[in-house]
Length: 526
Image (cartoon, rainbow, N blue to C red; front, side, top):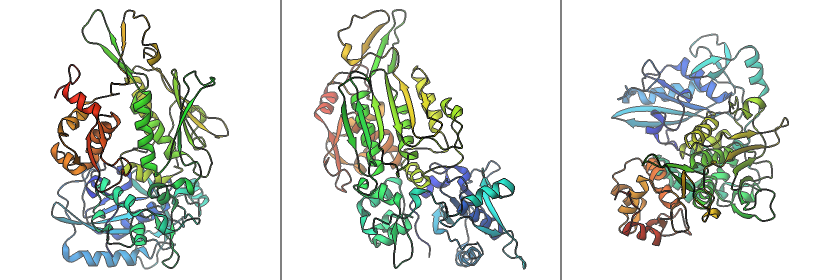
């Protein structure tokens, strides 16, 4: 039976949250090619989380979707679904994707979500209609489906019954441990059509559609990834599923330190930790030059690099290890430590040189959810983004550290050499003149997007009202580029801070925000 998928279809088709190599476009119903591709996604050779097949969507020579799509004729929808069901039974062991019928620009598409299977390896016939069927193992190689042969086939067979940890059943929990409000908030944030039906669905049915519940109907099981994202206290099931932020005012060898621990659903935990770090430990320095009017602005630690390093640590850590992700901050460097180290397919020398490209991912499902929430891009882009962010800030290169046994991973972000320490406010100024741009009364960063939010909040507004006031249609872009930075700036606050996921949540200016609105800094456009 067709059902809505827990993703934004427009984002999927335009490859905004899912990489092109995980999407197969088919202009029409081609059972042979489609079954082979479903088999390849089920084998999930690189633990990327499977993929999607879109029937009725054509593409150009570069593999990009063409709009409007050709669509599937209405009188063919039932026939295609019946033939698909029969063809999937030929996959060994049997494998059935989730199916959704979607309308895009007036045309109907059949969208198949094919997650990594629980019983790999899978075989499929080369030809569905052949009288004598010859079955083979298939995998994805970049954007193509190919037969697994030789060493590749042997490696696939070695993965027998090896399901990534986050996709396994949590036998210490039950479906009732899932939070419907958290699941609804996620679906609304990513813009999934499933959000419209979620209130009326039984919790188990909703969990199955979001692929966080599995097992037989008489004994359903919740998956580990479901508890990490959709339980208010996942640390009850996975001790030390947390982020520890530790500040060392005297350096790592000093006797004094301040510690703050962040727990809770994974996405919220990441966002709260990042906002806390940005608010308290990231500051900008303005370097004035005597020979020109334009000043140079640098951050002690660029936010993009910190965000990428922390999200990667949460994404790739092992939740079977009772160790938190630790962020160690001093004046000279910021270090993010996670356990264990990178996958052994990455050479130590390559990792330490910033050339980390993993062949297989430890937590494929965690990555799926983080991508939908725009918290990560995946596909080994984290290290290059950190390198680029540090270089753009004029910082020294980051240092990536692990050991031969891969017991831990550490990312060292050195402070910009010209960044002024907040405890040196009274230091004598020299040329070039260095002026710190951070005080208890000044916000860490006020971007043009944050300014627009502040100006729009003449009265408390809901998220929908604020987004509409700014004339923005893309909810994910609004949240990432406007709302979250505004909250982190401390110019804007929630009306219900103790209930961040409340459907009655609103946003208003803080006292600092009202002060900023009345007396904006010089050069701020209103």
